[in-house]
Amino acid sequence: MARNVQLTDKLYQYLVDHSVREHPVLAELRAETAKLPHAGMQIGPDQGQFMALLARLTGARKCIEVGVFTGYSSLAVALALPADGRIVACDVSEEWTAIARRYWQKAGVAAKVDLRLGPATATLDRLLAEAGEGRYDFAFIDADKANYLEYYERCLRLLRPNGLIALDNTLWSGDVAEPSNTKPDTVALRALNDALHRDERVDIALLPLGDGVTLARKR
Image (cartoon, rainbow, N blue to C red; front, top):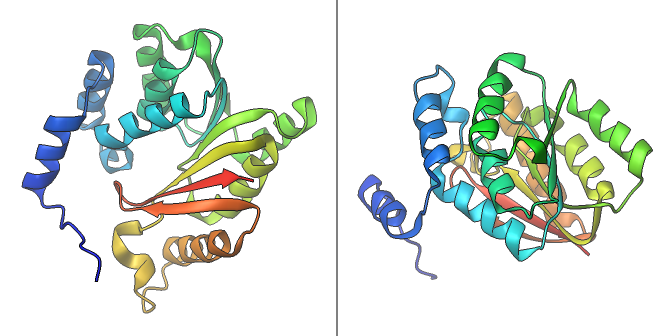
């Protein structure tokens, strides 16, 4: 059997201490977000750094984010993009994204972020109508779980060949592996994972990073 590391709190802290190089504005945003009632929605610094690395590895210039919250992931990616890089950031909350706007501005990347408030399916449909398919390099999906498949299908059309989609929460605290758990979000994520495993349009890897991150490379 393959060896699997059990990530205790102590080992996770070691991982952070020996891997993460967090930009000061990212650290400040993470600290502010930690005080909010929904702080658990924020990705960790290790995942933010991983996404920035993916953006650089793919040579991304045009990105999509579905689910902004307070802006940590979009800020991490924006900092990794070249000067002419852009992110279309989709969310429905003016309150949470107001925090994001402050930190994008503070980090000097506000011009790289095109915030679109409203249902993400409608925003993605407009992008398809405006620019057509195959125009984006990288997408990150971390929003309402019931619509993940809808977001995935639209982002896949928007991505160029070899473009990359990262989907968050695909292990869902382990609940996806418990058939007895029939809560709507768990069922939606389980269906997503099944669909991605069967999808021959992409190459995939499901990683035990954070709450589970699936990478899907468009063929």
